[in-house]
Image 1 (cartoon, rainbow, N blue to C red):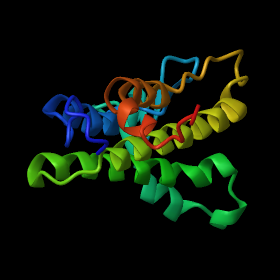
Image 2 (tube, rainbow, N blue to C red):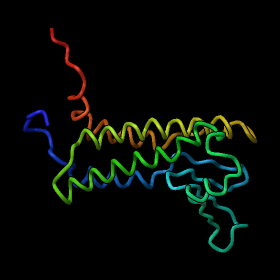
Image 3 (cartoon, rainbow, N blue to C red):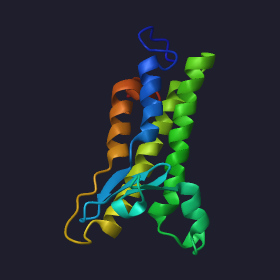
Length: 171
């Protein structure tokens, strides 16, 4: 740390909860126009609709999505290739915060930096979704929910930790 006594050494319980809760925030939400909704999440796709049985929900995990792909990974759109990275960065940040809470060992710059990388990756995924599905069946707004939530957490909780990494003006 920078030696400033006002900075936390590890994530606070509320920061830990927020970092872990980000794993449940969808990257974006796509309404179908017919009332059904697809949640694009870090874990995969969650589809709603009455044709999906009594629960009206179908989960399509990320790993199944990639296993079912008929095309090689390298031929997929870049935003789809970044999707597992977004999940990985979120998991690194959550693991780092959990490590701070359970083992009292955390570098908040790793937590905050991983969150920044995850925000960039989820923005890329959301932009790809918007490019592919934003204009089908009329204009749709594709809001990068996970990106917004992640940037908000970084701004509130980890900005001082990350700011200490930036070069300072010597004048």
